Image 1 (tube, rainbow, N blue to C red):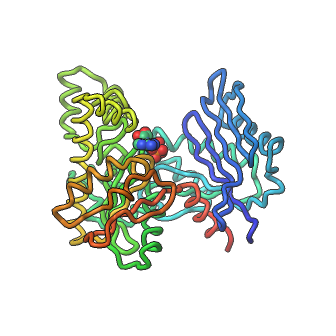
Image 2: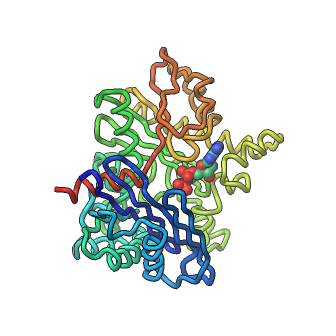
Image 3: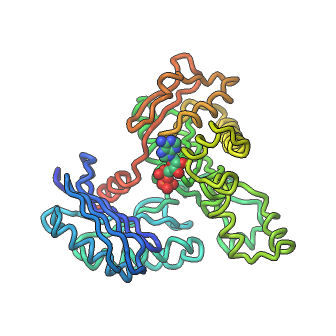
Length: 396
Ligand code: ADP
């Protein structure tokens, strides 16, 4: 019904982010975050209409965090009881081989998310805490898991299989699961709708702090750059992206680093941060303008990786109709968009430099009419995508 709402929850190890959304109109009714859970001065923010409440108080765990959220909805608004909440959507990072779409969280689904904790050790345990806490405050409506990996569960076997000894890969469930799937699925859908056809070979570049590329034919993904975990693929804010796994053996044997240290190095202290000291592209452009050579080289490395992936996916699909930029960098960084597209000029990709100047909070085609490939910017909206998926499941 037109006033139905969905509460979307993204629960991390020390934070709960939430948004109350009307899945049909897309309206974001209220949103907020509880951060630094477990610390003395947890940070809390809740926004509803023109009211914004910010406070700091100790929040011991996720249960207490959700109780604070419930209280904020009651005091600042809108009251959850009066909001026609028909479902709660939980963003879940790792759905492993089990889930290719959203799933109502019953006992089986809950224990599968639990079983997958070793494959998503940073995320899945925190998601379970979020589910437990949210069920306390909204016990009567269905809670639905929306998996970051679900869209890429449809990858062809030849794309998701690593050339690793079969018995070992099977025993430890090592394969490409991908990530950012909700965003890639949402953006690809928007592109089909903007261009008015499903018959498309497209590449979506989700370039945020984490970054990933996907190749999609029609409605189905055929490749994606993130792998067993979100470490693989493009150069990211703090992650290496592709790196020879032998670097791990070397750092372990010669650098005497522990596995946890290498994990931390590759996942948090590398990428643009490792190359320049900054993970934010705005800082890096500032350094480039000041003549910083390391920053210039870091940008070249970032763009080089993008060119390699786009070229490879173009070949995998045997053609390309649409190339789309999304997420923080993709939506806001004309320099990155131009840097990549200029390298693709030999294939007839041409963007309009005037149109490309914009920082986009809207959907736009930035290629010229004579470009061989349509180039677009489509702001991603993972929360809305989650709300829509939940609604399509619970409204039946
Ligand atoms: P996350 O992966 O954390 O969801 P986002 O998609 O929000 O990340 O992207 C955050 C990144 O977007 C920042 O680290 C920064 O590099 C980039 N970014 C945001 N705004 C701009 C801007 N105006 N110009 C260039 N880059 C930007």
